[in-house]
Image (tube, rainbow, N blue to C red):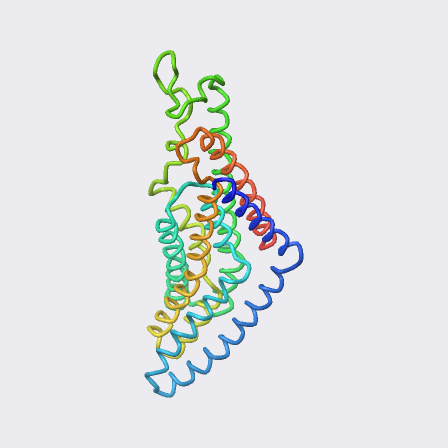
Length: 299
């Protein structure tokens, strides 16, 4: 059964890679972009209704904003890269990683609200200045932060492999990793290598995504501020964040499920002690390389 699960997981990865090489990512990106454009048109209609005094337009604005957030997250994005890669590289529960994904999306909304509020009423910026700040400063910073998380995973993986390499081969055997001579565990404990993450690690994940506000949220907040209904923009931005989270949470669950499928039956085995650092190193290198490329492109 273990090898069947591994085979299914490998087949899924091969299928995803094949679709990507065939250009399926561009098709999905075009579909997501078209969805965003339609949502923007509907959003403009809801704002006109809100300006005319239709209080029910707020509900429509929030629903449309949720849809915009969904399409925004469905296209190419840094949040999915980090959340998905982390779920594959590290042993973390689906619920915990989903909570991180939700917090990161809400953090993006908070960044947009603070930026627009400070830009309009404290600094006196206009729309172009704020969106330029988001694109030219926050976007590269976000990608750089994600690259640092990737490098941190590489460092953890390399350290884990080095620790395993320091243990004699006969100490790698045995279910409990204890030396038959002295009775002490010399090999790295798989549970210790894969132990879930502390508050600082979680904060780094959230911050790397949240530092870059969504451009659509900035536009919505600026327009509603100019209309004198900034509170409606805040509600729409939060709904947009929930729409984004619906995709990143799905990515979180999928990545955790994939990892568990590949490592099924090995949770108490020394195989995990070897596989864990290799996964961290490989996925971390991929995250760092892609994020660095995106950061350079954003400059």
